Amino acid sequence: MKIVVGIDTNGLYRQALSLSTRLGFPDAEWILAYSRDIPSEVAYRPDLIDAISQAGDSALEASAEDAAACGIEAKTVRLSGDPASTLVSFAEEIGADLVAVHSERKGRFGSLFFGSVGRGLAIGAKHSVLISKGDAPSTGKLTAVFATDQSEYAARSLEKLIAMQPAGIGRIRLMTAVNLNAREVAHGLPVVTGLVEAAEERMQEDVRRFRAAGYEASGVVLDKHVNDAIRDQMEETQADLLLMGAQGHGFMHRLILGSTSLHQVVVEPYSVLIIRP
Image (cartoon, rainbow, N blue to C red; front, side, top):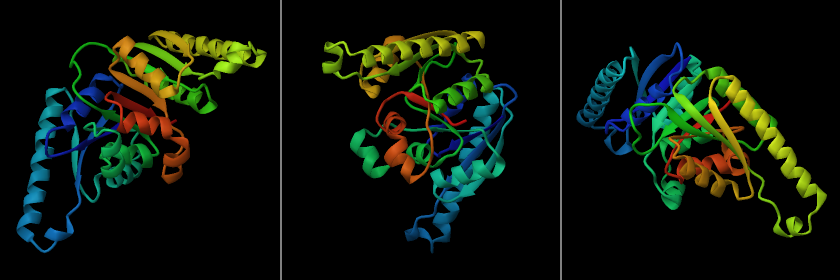
């Protein structure tokens, strides 16, 4: 398994490196990648370009030492260009399975107008993406929430996660949100009852899959908007990480397919692992 960690000059990458290490993927190959585009206003200033290059080299050297402290022998590479798009292209070129970066929480409007590397990866990447946020304990098994809409794609994402064998996850809470119409519920319409029963039955199947893979797993079906349901479960379980599939990539993914995953990446405060089978 190839894991690319995006490196920055402010040391924020350490959280992404720590979290990706704690996930405990077996037989992982680590590549630490730094990328920075050259602003047009300094394009004719060799001294400033050299300073940017030296800062990148120093960041890579420091990241290699940090990786070694985590017991990882990692390769380093310095790239050139917009960090998000360059990391996507590089990951595709080497056949990476996962790209990990750290993202500072921008808030709803800050993320919308200013963007971030994490946001760019969530939109543009074809591979799985780990976006760490905030600080998390550096030891112990991770607790995760797996958000599923119980679609065929979500089922493949679940199987992909199990195949990745993250030994660092100890407990998983699976959740799905049905967001029922209150009027239909009040009238006891059969279609509503059947929807809930089907969701609960499918949930138990998914729970059994995780338990068979060696994880402590439980599941819940909630009548809430999906983002509210995820937030509640993250808080209730005190989870370290949100797991979810995100179908598609690119502009149409942002507009149509990825509204929930994109919201979780750019607005909410917790770390997210986007799984793309």
